[in-house]
Image (tube, rainbow, N blue to C red; front, side):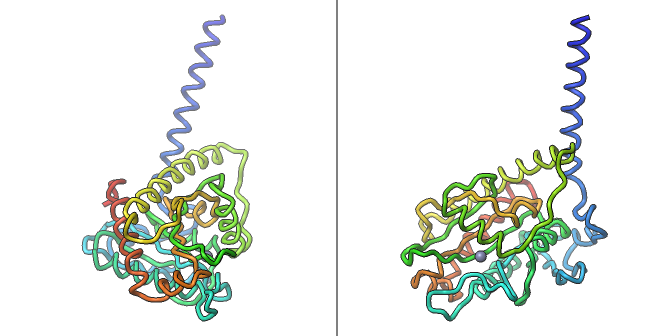
Length: 294
Ligand SMILES: [Zn+2]
């Protein structure tokens, strides 16, 4: 009797594990936008086109790669519209302008290199919530989400680039402060359903998303070393809502501190931004190649 019960328990455990694994794969392989209404995923896989999104979200243009079917990289210029982000120490530039300029340069460079397809969350001075930004990543089936920001700190000497990846726990008080400021700027987020099998499966998917995001951040740091000014601890972890909800490996780049005169002068010019733009393009391509998304 005891043996029969043990066998039954073992069988039930194996069945549950199989269900979890199958569910996890189903979630990862589900076409983007399955739960978010119709999306032209098939057409999107073949080349450049514009995907119509709900009125609140602007049309997203996907730029074609030299070879059709390449993975899509979604670049998110932080802030926009009524949310200017941080203000430069000179008082003449806002974060939203610099993130848009840098995002355009990164998108242009990736398009020119032709190894991936690329889209931008916004191409003008428009306001989008963090939810809307993450929803675009899911709808177009992005394989990678890169959010660009520039920070401001009370210490005017703070400068250099930081690469943030998603985590439940912040790696430092500063990372927590930065994440909570960015989360606040993006307004309220809808709560997620929990307490169900789906939430367990989502947790498993989220675990993988966090690991792949951390790997991308480490890869970017390796490529950046000696080429651009990095913070003393350049890879940080924090609970960024926009990264979590993008449902794909994601990186948040804090390009520098516009509260620092040197960083502001550097980030305000195309030439000053160019080394970081190149590092990001190379890290993005290498990451997608390593994940065999090519
Ligand atoms: Zn920002």
